[in-house]
Amino acid sequence: MFGFLVAFGAACATAQTAVGGPVTHFADTSMFKPPAGQKIAVIEWEDLECPACAHAFPIVHEAVKHYNIPLVRYDFMIPGHAWSKQAEIDARFMQDNYGLDYATEYRREVFATQSRIASQDDLNKFTQQFLQAHGGKQLPFVMEPKYLQEVQADHNLGMKLGLQATPTIVVVTAKEWIQVEDPMQLYAAIDKAKADLDVTKAAAPVTSHHIASTKQ
Image (cartoon, rainbow, N blue to C red; front, side):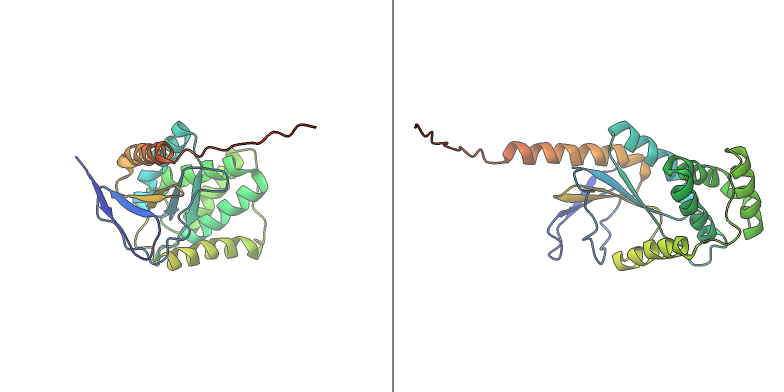
């Protein structure tokens, strides 16, 4: 059974924890925070040609659905992968034009079909079949540069982080981040983050405010 391994870094104000392995010494963890207004979130870096990412995908999505917490997803292009960049660009186009759920389903089916996609041509055929089967949609003849720029921006952010592998999965709160080395431990990591938030809330000092009344 995996335990929780804890370390504290002087360069980072938040507690660093890992589940199922040692803490990765990321170069810049300033991005490890939930979206505005959220107390907890899962951040994931994935590559659509990565078999480990394909394994993690359904686990991550079921977990965030179960806990009703946001998933912040980033693309990270692995050098040497033949078609993942184009798949990520296509997914970005679908998200902007056909909605997040549509693009998520595309990613889900790419991962499920991953072992049968060996080349750019295979990907193009798969994508056309997906579009026809899901509402008869189309990709543009010439893709706008902004989608490549978005994918590249995610990749650059991963390089700034010092990303070492995909998938990289991190549960984040305002006070700590928990790296999940084994996707099967994601539920345990979220439970730990929620428990830590409850402890922090319970330990917060109670402040008494005296409101003076005025009489006319």
